[in-house]
Image (cartoon, rainbow, N blue to C red; front, side, top):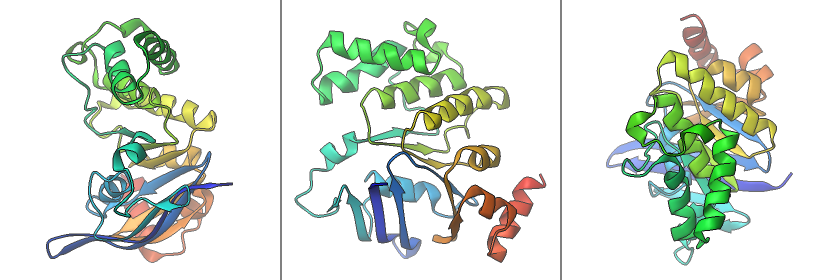
Length: 245
């Protein structure tokens, strides 16, 4: 399988605080990688470094064989290839659901309005939001907003979808509808990198699970290995604490 993204010796500091230390891992085409760990372990910072919302302090991010941290690399072009789904949805409040999914296509991909609408409608159908195309974000529940946000990211035809704790801001009853959509996307072969505290999702859907602790990758492996037979004491402690809640 082709590596789409490879992170090599990545580090990130905010002042004297080293948040990421010598991170090495890769994401292959069609793979679902879940990153788990306690709050403050560096998971979201890693995701924000991968899509360059934060500039890494050191190391390399290899995308399709090229280091995108090289000066001559077109950051905007690279970022278009990564779909990003945030905790807080980040929808345009003055646009309805359909328009939210069209704006980026028209502005950045230079698609015609007709083509952008066709693509947007297709993905709104995929996430089960086709009946809400005229609704503004304020008229939608958290779970519905997140499904629109997923459709919007998919409409840009990304190579990889990045999810930053996509269910953490949702009511318990709407978490399931978002996880169901994400599971369907995983089954369709979409390449996904997911920061999540939903252990059931990681266990069931991930091809590989990465456990982060205090800014390092403490352990990575198959869901079966990480959940049933973790090698590291820190991994065992974390899972015991989370799964016993």
